[in-house]
Length: 286
Image 1: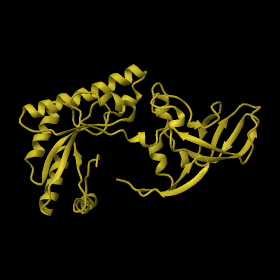
Image 2: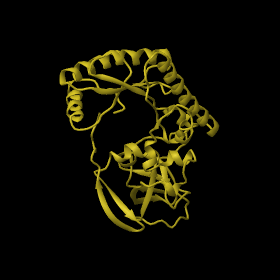
Image 3: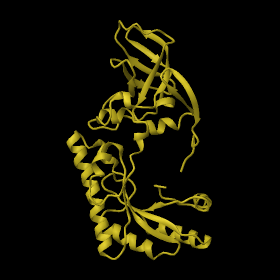
Image 4: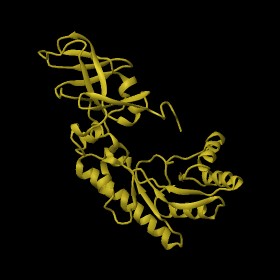
């Protein structure tokens, strides 16, 4: 569970999960560690805990080096907890710029983690898991000596951001949003029935920023340039023969939040729908 778990309701859910599954979580502050320690001690359980390290994203995470080492030792001393290693999400590398800059940011994050782990080991504490995570740099950070785990979450589906990063071509993107041409107000503009409630408002995760809200499959010259809740305004060539009512597929900018917007996914093989999967965590928050 790569998120800081704070508060009574989350702690109750954590205890229930720990009684029927192997759960590991992260900590980036002593107060969070102490709260988890009291919880686990009272329940007679031991929770593996990883120190979350900020390698440049400036979101959650303690700083690499000595601050991470010190927090690891604090965790190791607390009853009910077991220090399990280090974890980072090098999301900043996604928007670092050109491919060589993305690569450099990914390598830097992996090296920070490996160096911090070595510092911890020299201080007398084992650090068995060194976990990094970002699809755009997965093949890069995984090459850093000392890294033991990579978490490239978007690889399950891929999305427009990964296409722009040249991780995959569009045809490797497994999840698309099916939309209908709702109207054609002008010759060079159509409205799709997919707005922010279907595609989210997320921009593509690249730098410099790229406009647009997705790739319209089989229509590379269409520009899905503006979204409101239920409308996807799309610029098209004036002589395009597209018809009102026509169905199109959209590869979203960022597939992760898109999945959460739907109750189910339709699984296709060629032109056939072969299954329907419920989105089990639909509408769930941390």
